[in-house]
Amino acid sequence: MTAHLQLSDVSVSFNGFVAVNALNLAVGKGELRCLIGPNGAGKTTALDLICGKIKPTAGSITLRNTELTALEEHQIARAGVGRKFQVPSVFKELTVRENLQVAYSKRTGVFANVMRSCRGEETDGLDMLAQLVGLENALDKPAAYLSHGQTQWLEIGMLVAQDTELILMDEPTAGMTAQETLKTADLFNRLKGKHTLLVVEHDMGFVKAIGDVISVMHQGRLLAEGTAAEVERNEEVRRAYLGSGGITGA
Amino acid sequence: MTAPLVLPAPAHRTRQAAGRTRTQVLLYAFVCLAVFVIPLLIDSDFLLNKIARYIVLGMLAMSLALSWGYAGILNLGQAMSFGLGSYAMAMALKLKTVPVHTGPEGLPDFMVWNNVPSLPWFWEPFHSLGFAIAAGIIVPVCAAAALGWFMFRGRVTGVYVAIITLAAMVVVNLVIIDQQRFTGGFNGITDLAQLKLFDITFDAYGRSTYYLVACCLTASLFLALAVTKTKAGLIIQAIRDHENRVRYFGYDVAAYKIFAFSLSAAIAGLAGMLYTVVMEFASPTFLGVPLSLSVVVWCAVGGRQSLVGAFLGAVLVAGMQGALSESKTFLETWTLVMGGLFVIVVLFLPKGLAGIAELLSVRIARLRQRRNATVAEPKPTEVGP
Image (cartoon, rainbow over all chains, first blue to last red; front, side, top):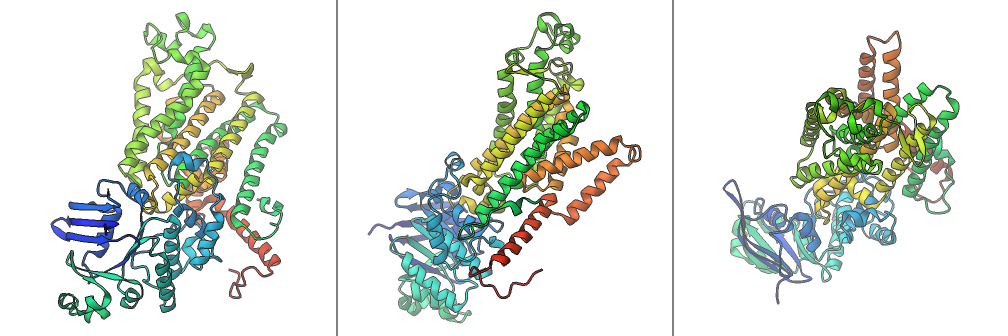
């Protein structure tokens, strides 16, 4: 199977500190891959590298055989990479509906969008999407008034609206209640297959609920890869997590 | 304003966004209508000319609201576009002025005094009024697009944008003052002919000029409003809110910023051309720092996130400036009064005068909603502020 997303020997260093060191990662099409690891392992940096927020100092990143490292952020997004940030990043001054409209980015050109009114054909679809993420009653509320959990949901909804092949999720369930986390897991299970997902998560219960294959990072490298059970048995992984109460306590 | 009351209740589902747009359109139409009605109530040509002047300055403030309030680009050099437009018009009108004031072959008087033998090449095309009007918009747009290209492609943001735009304007200003032989230097370009368009003569003190200004205001106000209502307008506001996030949705942020910046320059250029017609001269002060910074103050007072708010703010503050500086009691202290007013507005009305209107309309909408409350949004905890 050829990988949908392929990272080959990707390295990046900041002022001599090597955050990601010769990372190799291959994610198949439609797969939901979880990325775990102790704090400072380079998980978020790996996502930053894929979406273009950070440029690698060495190595190559390809999506569908398209080299991403040479592209700018917006070009990478157009190539099919969507990103949810660790700190929920939505447009606080805009309403929930407007947030979703911005995220729905089939056409990205300035002049194509000057000719289009905001209340286009996609409105009904966005209303349904708002229902999916439980924000149908907040559509006309500015995003600044949402709770933390709702903001998380809004950003997830925005990624669904963006509808990219590859979705990168950085701690999507942070700040959610157990019930909300369950709902998120359910949504992710529905997204996989159609989208390729790469999820950074700390909540092992959530990881077990959604992840087929788990990749473990440690000190900028890939330490282990396998199912939840395999990873938990792995001696190196146990050692890496020592001091933080083992893998389930991380 | 009373505009929200005119709104008919929506048939079924309340679409707040659509309702807001309708309120805005009504409000804008009302303001434009008021501008057109003014000459019917005023008898003095002198006063009418003064009001036309304030309206042009209002257009300039509105153009800044588009770039500052909507796109988050604080252009401290907004008067650069204004001045370029103003000079384009002045050059054309100078060449049309009656031969008494000019040298041989219609050479402008200041060129005669500066021993310029013949009309420089870049003055030649200004024999055509059509070219001048096009240049009055295209030159500021190109200047803004070029400046924007360097700034926004290089991801310059915030206070640095303010500094660069201000510096760029000062450079243009100095060049104009320095090149006295071609630009009239400090004196600017004076002694202009009256603008003649489609067999109508626009006397600065006549009603025709006033109505020309009013038409241009209406057109540019609604054009700007329409742009803010498009998807591009929404993306521009998203950029103001969280620029980096927008990139990851595939939008080229720099392109959108250049677009907003250039559109704002186009409106400012148009306003500059009108200013020349109303004032009957062009001067380096039209792209000077004091004017450019005043525009920012007007915008802040009127409400930078509202196009019509910025317009009204400019008319109000510029009008007050005029009235205070001419009154006997405030002859010496009027700048102090203006400064105090500005401080009060910034402290207590961060969204400017438009903020008050917005607050009122929200209250009214909430009242109406509560009255119509049936099944929509059962919120038992909602208590009035």
